[in-house]
Structure formats: C-alpha cells, structure tokens
Length: 496
Image (cartoon, rainbow, N blue to C red):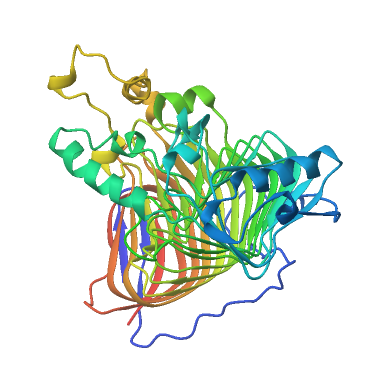
C-alpha cells in the first residue's frame, strides 16, 4: 500500500506470512557491521577498540582477616577491611582477600592499586544503619549534592578493582521502605519531584572521578538505590556482574548499571534484574547538568542480559551534558520494559546521538523501541508548592528549582539512532516514538531487519527522516503503525 502525503514518503508492504529474521552473530571481540545504514558519511566505530580499563592491580595478597575482619554478621568489620585496603595501597598495591564467610560492613573506600577480592564463598552484608555511610559530595539522579557514600566506593583514583565470585548483599529494603513511606506524604504536599533526593538511600557501588577501574564477576543484590554508578570517570570495565535487586520487595529506582558523564566504558557479560533501568546512560539533568556540561560517550554494552527492569539499554532521562557514541550488541531482554529506551524532558537540554544497537533477542518486552522527549512530567518538572514559598528550603531544592534560561536551552535533541537485527516474541508494543512539536522532532532514526511478534504496533509521530526497512510484524490486534506528522518517512513493513 503506497501513501503520498506532503513531506511524506511511506511504503508499506502487507504480507500474509512472515519469514525469519536473519541475525548475524559475532564473537565477543568483533565489531558488528552497520553497512545497511543510509548515510552520506561513513560510520566510524574505531573508538570501540579503546573502551575499558587498560590496567589491573598487582597480585600481592593482603588478608583482611589478619587485620581483624570477622566471619560473624553481628560484628561490624568495616574498620578491619578498610585497614587491609589502606595497608595494601600504602605498600604498592595488590589483592585484599577475605576467608569464606559472612562479613558485615559499612562504607569501604578502595584505593589506588587495590583489588578488593570478594572470593567464592564470601558474602559482604551491608549495614542497614545509614550512619555507617558518611556523606560525601557527589552527583545523584542528575544533580550534584551531598549524599551518603556507597557500600563500596572507588573515588578520585586509578588502577583499582573489585572482583571475585562472591556476593555483596546491600540489604536495601530498609531504604526502599523509607522511600515509599516518604513518597506517600510528599505526593500529598505536591513534592513528588524532590522525594527521590530527600530520601537519601545507599548505592551499591560508586566509581567516581577515576580511571582504569574494573568491576568483575561478583553478585550484587538488594541495593538501596542504584546498583553501580560510574561517574565522571574513564576507561572502566564492568564485566560478569550478576545484579539482582528484585529480592524481598520492590526496590524503587534500583537501576542496575548507570554510566554517568563518563567515557570509554565497557559493560559486558552482565545479567541485570532490577526495578528501574537495567543499563542506563546518563549525563546530568536540568540547570545543574547544563552547568556541569560533561557528556557520556564511547560506551560499549555487549553480551548482556536484562530481566525485569525499565530498559535493556536506556539513554536518559538525564541528557543535559549529552550522550553520544553508544554501541550495544549481542543482547537479551526477558520481561524488560523496553529493549531500547531514549527519554528526556523539556528542561534537560543536551542530546542523544549516534546510538547503535544490534543483535537483540527480546522476549515479553513492553516496547522494542521507546523514544520520548517529555518523559514522566510528575518527576521531571519542579514547582515549589505555595505552602513552602517564602520559607527556607534545602540547598538541593534550590538547585532543582533553578530554571533553565532561555527555555530553549532545555530542549533535548535525539538523532542518529540505529536499531537492527532484532527478534522479538510475546511483546506488548513494537514502537512508541514521538517528537514534541513541528520544530522539535526525532531526527534520523533507522530500524532494519526486525522480526517482532507483539500485541500492538504503536505510533511514530513528529519525526524527520525516520526509516524502517525489512521490518516484519505480527500484530495481535491487526492494526498497523500509526504514522503522523513525519517528514521523509520510509516504512517498508511486512504485516501478518
């Protein structure tokens, strides 16, 4: 069926039977091909070879047990483990080990040259006492503020690691419950936009202002807030982590892995089950994020699994510093809300561009692609209720209430997004992708070789150069994609 509209070129081919989706496979070291992309400029992925940590700590061993760490969850071993880390660092670096067993700890700080090895049979139990996590200047959910330190912290250093086949149980339910209780009251007061910042919760692992850091092979579970945050850092590797935040309750904002204003990052062989974004790319929010103005760029995500959660790969909603040059491939999503989610708000600003995602198997996902410039308004926009006006308010409230001026600086740009070689079954909706108005559109999105079995087709609205080729859709409700207000649209789709 050929449709001709002003500024619109749509070619839709309806077929009764779908054929299989040819999905080429790559070995872990290969860079997938995107030679199908329609572009006047060559696609340059040479930067992929530069991602990840380039160094790893030495192998000299230091036993934390020798410094007094006790295999007894009723005893706090923070000081003993920290003493072993400090001694290891002061004598040139090496591995800090623990004998198999269960150890309770507050915040630990990994130093230069140190590999904290959480070996097989070792479990670190995080203290549930917020006082065991000293507050530090940091960035949380897109703004810089004072916040409790994480369970494990790699701050202002280089050549450090956390590794081993053991477990870090962050026991975060006490913080989840605190948040849900606060949120009920905050919503009544018109303060939904600030409760996430007032309900200070403990992150699992924070890597901040550091380089050549490796996180490898351990299990991280029940984090009070985000699981792993890599902030203001470069050349870091997250490899083989098993993250499970869906144990013993619903953990709000328990993202799996967040890459935040950082560059040359490798995420591979991870299995993430959480209650928010599984693997998320961020770069600050609103006026504060625009002030810092640090992008996240050159990130590879490969050979990973996303289970419950909001997005296998999510870009945003913190886009202020800009997000670019992101590659994801050989990925699996099981029950995840979206395979690829791109989100922002009209006061974030920044951009998301040059996003490449290919070779994806998606089972029972809500969306294959979701792109929204005006995501979650109740959270994204800050307004001080009348009852608080004229009163003294916390500093981070003032940061959140700072307007973006001129307002056009807050308009985010999404462009050059490429999604290919996707096999999806049992899905909810194929696509939801919308610009905001005639001057703020999604630009140059290209989808290729996708075979999807879903309940609904979805919609594409307010775009420039949106291309769908070799798309095969089996739609349960028999409706086709709703195309509206699109310029230079090409849609070559086979419907069953």
